[in-house]
Image (cartoon, rainbow, N blue to C red; front, side, top):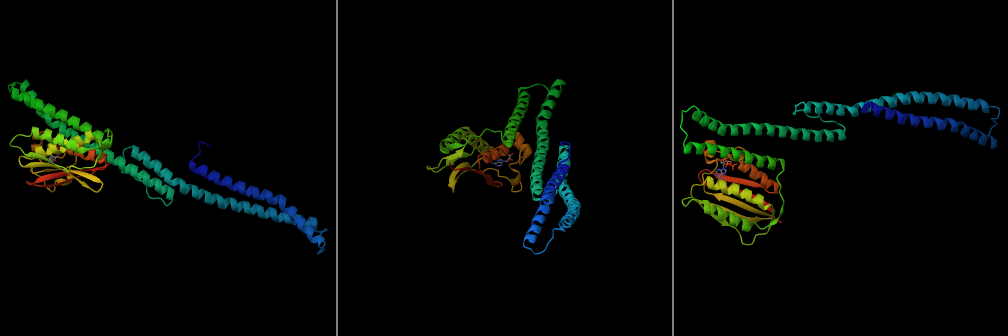
Amino acid sequence: MSKLSLGTRLFISHLLVMFVGLGSFIGLAKFSSPKMFIIRLEKLEQQGLFTVRSARTYLVKGFETAWNNSAFWSVIFGVSAAGGVSYLVSRRTIKPLNQMKEITQKLAQGHLEERMPDSNIPEWDQLGKSFNIMASSLQDVEQRRRELISDMSHELRTPLTIMRGYLEELANGSIEGSPDLYLNIVKETRRLERLIHDMQELSKAEAGYLSITLYPINILPLLTSLVDKFSDQIMEDGPIIKLECPTKLPPVLADSDRIEQILVNLIGNAICYTEKGSITVKVWQENKQVWIAIIDTGIGIKSEDLPYIFERFWRADKSRSRYSGGTGIGLAITRRLVELQGGKIEVESEVDKGSTFRFSLSIA
Ligand code: ADP
């Protein structure tokens, strides 16, 4: 029985139900009907309507033959009709399952674009739709995996090529070793280290493995200490950094380590892309959220570049950012960290005027 397909089992179970129903009907009717018929005849006799004693056996026999004939034909028709309907129903029910089996096999072979067609059986349709959502997310993950590998190999190739170039020239004597040259090699090695570190953080953030513990925190001390730390690092002729924060601010539901990571990324970028002017860290409350904005008066970002700014490895000016040591991963991590804490991140920018990055946190 276990080797039978679901369709056959469904079909057999339909037939079984039908046979049990018909059998009990025939059995009951066969044994009780003649008795009831006789009782009825006796009643008629007692009332003296007519005498049937002589015709009794003949009548009962006639009834039995009529009953047997009709029962025989009703079984034949019943079985064929119910069998036919049962067969059609099981075929119709089982078809989407077979389709799903084929599509799953194709998905497993790497054809991630395969989808289940709509079904007019609501349960199958629902299952098909959920299956399609799962297939789409698989396709998405696969697409992202491919992009990530290609982006990463591209990013790793540049510092490796530079280092190999230096080392080959050193080896064949076409250049002499000097502290500057070794420092250049060290710089490229650091870049590789940073890239790998950022990649690790990003992949953890994207896969949701970053440990984030949300608890009510007061962000003012964190902001003050960060702004102080950064203003100590900025050169004298650099931009000034200031904090604009209302003294009364409700606690927010956040992870202070992650908030610090977000702010370090955003303020770090602002300093990197602002030669002079100011960087303002502004905080305000709006409905049930606290917003933190980092407003700079730096080089700004072109409006056509803004939609890509949070994508990993994206840099407005690749050569300049590479020179400044950027990996193009910072904002991708930042966005993920904000989202993991239930917030939103937005950007506004104008070339040569400055950029504003703001993100929200829920009030505890
Ligand atoms: P990176 O490590 O290169 O800074 P990010 O993901 O942090 O990577 O930033 C991506 C790109 O966005 C940067 O290379 C830069 O072109 C642009 N960018 C980020 N912040 C700013 C800013 N405050 N002003 C101007 N451009 C910015």
